[in-house]
Amino acid sequence: MKVAVLSESSADKAAVRVFIEALLGRPTEKPGMPPFRARGWPSVRESIPQTLMHLHYQTDAEALVVVVDSDRSPLHDPKSQQRSACNQECRLCLLSRIAENTHAQLRRRPDRSPPRIAIGVAVPQIEAWYLVGRDPSVSEASWLNAVREGRTPYDSRQLKQRVYATDRPSIDLETARAVEESRRIVENDLLDRLISLFPVGFGTLAQTVKNW
Ligand SMILES: [Zn+2]
Image 1: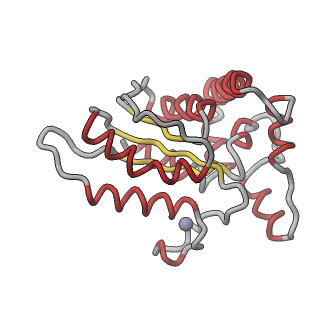
Image 2: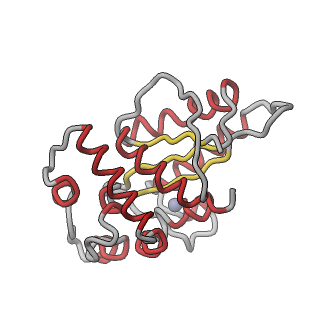
C-alpha cells in the first residue's frame, strides 16, 4: 500500500511508518512527497492541504497519515458527537477539519479515489508512545489526571531524556531511537497496549488504519 506520512520530524515519520505497517499487517511504499520539510506542529497543520493535493494529483498514494504532538493542547473528547462540541484547541478536530475541507475541494480523478486520511495526536509528545512497555507511569490517563489537578507529570525534557538519554538528541540519534523503540513495541506485541494506554491519540489512528 502506498502511504505518505506527515509528522513533526523525519524521526517521528520513521517510527509512525513502523506502527502503520504493523497495524496494516503489510509493508508500505512511500509516494513522492512535496519538497518541504515539516518541523513542528504549525508547519504540519499548514502543509496538510498542499500535501493532500500533491498526493492526489501528482502521485498514486492511497493514504496519508498525519501525527502531531498534543504539547499542552486539550485532548480530544471522544464523547463529543459533534466536532463543534469538542474543545476549540483540540488538534485532532482541527486537523480533521482541515483534511475534510481539502478533500471536499479535490477534483475527482477517473482512475482513483482521493487518498484516505488517518490522524494521530501523541499526548503530550511522541516520545510518550516510545515508552510503552518500559515506563508504566506514562499514558494519556496519567497525563490527563495530572493536568486536571494542575500538575505536569513529566515534561518534554524528561520524556526526551528517558528515550534518548539526552534532552537534545541529534536527528540521527532521534531517528535511530525512534525506530528502535517502535520496532520493540511491534515485535513484542505491545501494539494493543499502546492503543489501550493512548486510546484517543493513538487508538483513533489505529482504528482508522485497521479499516483500510
Ligand atoms: Zn476534538
